[in-house]
Length: 144
Ligand code: NI
Image (cartoon, rainbow, N blue to C red; front, top):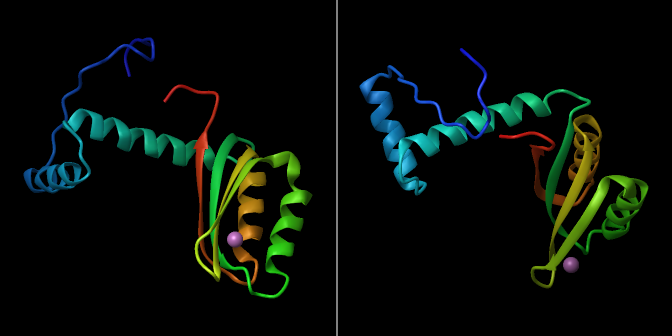
């Protein structure tokens, strides 16, 4: 609120917070390695901003999809490759790791509108034989 400041300018604010809630917050940020509350608080705000911005279907985003799958499942590797070729304009890079004799880990870096990235991620994650995975999105073209 108040007058608009440059993004790099620090502003001090006071927050009233329940003592128990603050104690719990301090425990968690300590476990996560934060040196002070301010940085932890800023990261919470940034996370909320990213969540809010990526909710808009047309928002430009970058994302990573992590997939773990068993490459022995019939045609699975082929299906995942076919999907990636179909969406080649949205894919910046793919990292493939052969975890063991059976399992593969793939990390796919995506770029596009929030909706396009989520649609492709959903199709990859829903492919039969993909055992685990997750999409993580972040915003681009803005200061956080
Ligand atoms: Ni592999």
